[in-house]
Length: 187
Image (cartoon, rainbow, N blue to C red; front, side, top):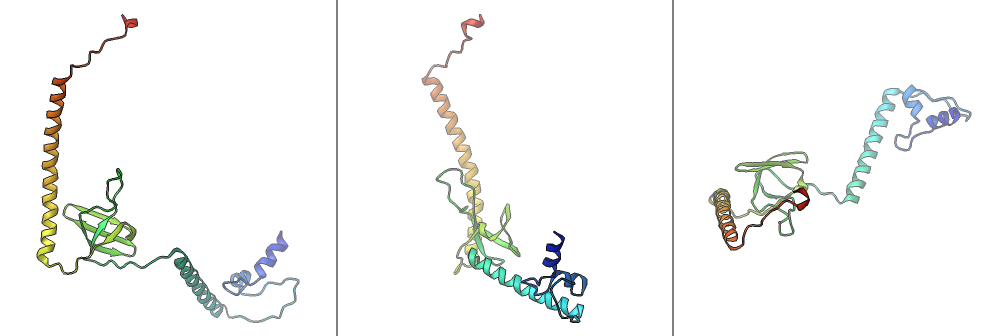
């Protein structure tokens, strides 16, 4: 095992083009293979290894991005977006229909908000919507409509509760209440 490790550490690495033992100790390790002794400057060696490592990492990143079909985000501060929402049933839309405005972009972290609601997610949760041609008045109307929808939702919930209560009362009048008795073996 020791012989294998010695040979492995003395073999130049494909990325750095330098043996790991040479990088660690600053000199070539003696193995059974004949070598020419070359003096190496440790600082120059470290710099060239770092440069090659950086190039190799960049090449791997480009390959991975190409394979995963990754794209850079085009969302900026002030853009309007829709946020992906959880499906509750088959009629639930994929995105919440109420638009949000992006307030911060920090790397892949995007924060968007509308009055009374803020959310931070990565770009895959957002869908940009086109707002070209909207004036500031239209944007204000969009915000006002959100407030009115919330008020309407509250009113609708109250109406639904009243309606449900009326239906329950009608059902109670139509059908007699179920008579619950204990089983005979408890008597």
